[in-house]
Image 1 (tube, rainbow, N blue to C red):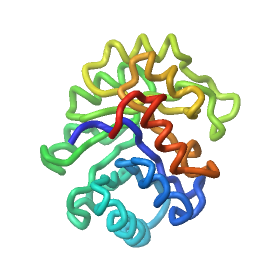
Image 2: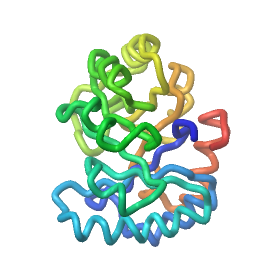
Image 3: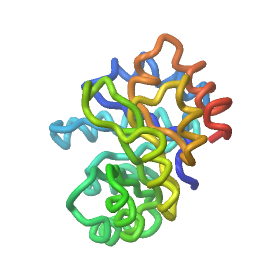
Length: 206
């Protein structure tokens, strides 16, 4: 398994029901989905995650759980993505073992260096561009993002304000891939958008 070229973040607060866009995204070539639902109880999260896992598996696609390593035994083949900050990825890696795909959200060069040193297989580095979720907040910009990414030893995905119109800038800055929320689940044609992001903008198929 290699790091995602395109990581779709399915956030229940930002996306319509997944049945409205996920089949089209899979048809467009999506192979990595991060299910994020902060505050949701484990039982509800697991129920939805199992449904997503069942839909992804026939396509050879991977579900990544968000901040819930304890649910991995119930979802064989799933990966894990952890938010920035505690707990240490060293402890998480020890808990989940060496075979589970592990990612980390990072917002600084120091955070990215620590994530890889502690066992991350990939990181997201954000925000590259201004975002709808945090209007007016500071963002890294291409030059700063590129400078940091060049100093990191593993796959770095660009996150924050990514669209099909600017994803090529992330790739030119050294991004291994991109991660996005509304750029897939919030568009009228997720299949075409996914294929476009995996084709011309990203420069590689999953």
